[in-house]
Length: 176
Image (cartoon, rainbow, N blue to C red):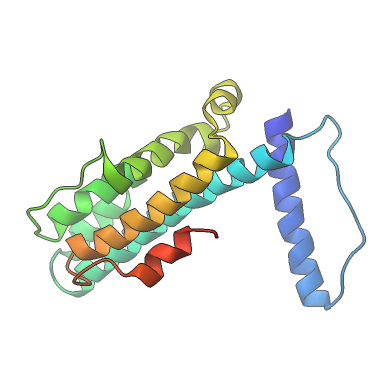
């Protein structure tokens, strides 16, 4: 129940923020689901895992769309690639772009992409027991986020979108 309630509370918090933005005033309403939630740090990690997976998939789909627009892959290949699971899609991108370099899913920042994608099904299909055991600690999640940002910037280099990794982009993943 704490994981379900945590998702419920996270969604409620976003809905409340939307209300406050659209109404132009703060709401004093509070919500604590009966039965409890994960502790706040774990709840935030849960949200980060889900959002990082969406971020990875969105980035991969964006890059696939660029490959279609540039004519490097056909629309049919692009459509098929978009249906792949995020992890497979991510690691297929260099091949789709015609690049010889392969990403290493066993080390470096791309390993973290693989690790976070491996948590995807547990999180999105809410496999309670497995997810609770595999949920990263807050410090690990911060490290994962930093490495995912680094992997995204490395992908830009691999795909020749930029000549080298940009420090200003890498800083986005770090919190002083």
